[in-house]
Length: 63
Image 1: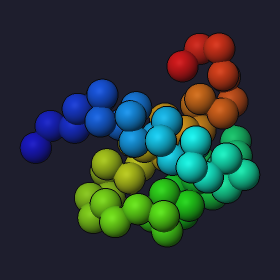
Image 2: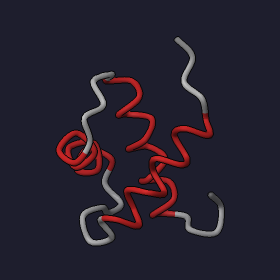
Image 3: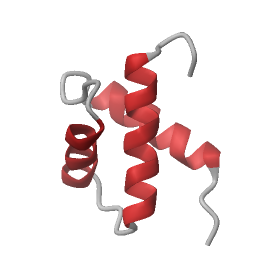
Image 4: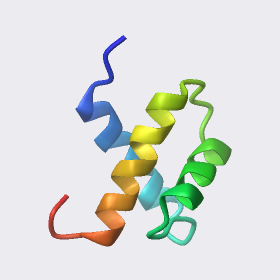
């Protein structure tokens, strides 16, 4: 199963809007938050979303 980049970006952006104070610059923390607030069962999809949120948080202009 291929992970669509649009799905990762849309989900990550939605989570950042819904839970603005929950995320930070640490990938491990963001990974735990994504696991808590979503029902995504795939570990790789959760990690991709957490990575996107971390990258966006650390470099807001880039992503």
